[in-house]
Amino acid sequence: MDRRTAPCAAALAAATALLVGCSGEATDRGTSGSGTTTSGAAPSSSSGSAPTDVVTGLDAPWSIAIDDEVTLVSERDSGRVLELTDDGTREVGTVEGVSAGGEGGLLGLAVHDDHLYTYFTSADDNRVVRHELTGEPGSLALGDAETILDGIPSASFHNGGRIAFGPDDMLYVTTGDAGETDRAQDPESLAGKILRLTPEGEVPEDNPFDDSLVWTLGHRNPQGIAWDDDGTMYASEFGQDTWDELNVIEAGDNYGWPTVEGTADEDRFTDPVQQWSPDEASPSGIAIDDGSIWIANLRGERLREVPLDDVTTSTEHLVGEHGRLRDVAVATDGSLWVLTNNTDGRGDPGDGDDRILRVGVVRKA
Figure 1: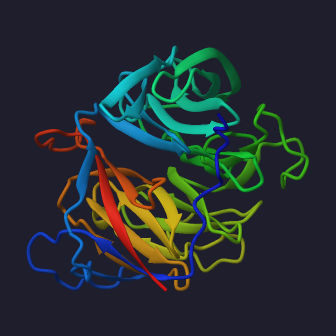
Figure 2: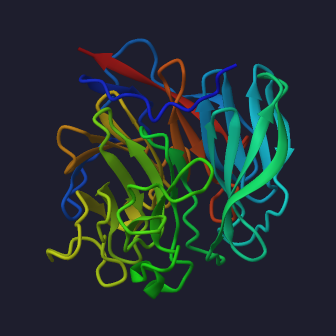
């Protein structure tokens, strides 16, 4: 079976609407920084509005990796990798060496060429480890572990942790500043960066800095990366007290932290294309589909849609309906799968939490 990861679902040139239920009266939300935000509109389709459960009963889940017939989920604190099946979930394996605490633990997943790549916090650092995926869908197992990158600074917070293969078949890794802000501006540190490496963990020859895995610097705690069908890369980032960000990622650019949070208007830094107050955002995983960037928000408890044809605007969906949202992915049936994160110690778990929700998208030519 070919489990090779597609870069990201191609964005289609079409207008979309989510099939979501609205709780309470919709209200307009004002401008936050550079982005104009509106409330989610009522669905225009009669085919149903309520998101449905794909699976429930997850324990502090962090990442969804969908590849052809395979869907895998990481559990931050247990270190388990789960496979979704027709009957629910089954354990593929437990990643050895995970040291969970605070925001650290088993974080990002990516599947590429019959291997599962994992980003996790160990007792000493954050690292990227890959395992061969053995067996067939429904009976997968983890082969031997191979560390392809270690020495990423770790802490009880700001560990970054999202990993994904880009359209160039290179592995991109987001890292946080691990609580020491100056690391983000230090080109010799792996913290506060977006890194780019080969599938074997080597430095690609065309990276912007000689002999360095650093792709971009000046990040506080980026946790979402995705590409549109033109190859443009986007990343979401947690700010501190003022602004969370959506950035267009360009090789070698500096995104300002800790010198600046949000828009700087300085030539030496690259400004976000949109920013939000943290209480309305705290953006984690993102996905691109059907002409929009979809952003899962934790503290803001909403799914934000940013149209690619105007990335300074956004629309909110599921506001306050399902609690904290950690990740979003495009399923093989074209729906969005949204991962809740209410059992991570900061949320208010409801019956059945945590869960993956299936959210339909109406596609219009």
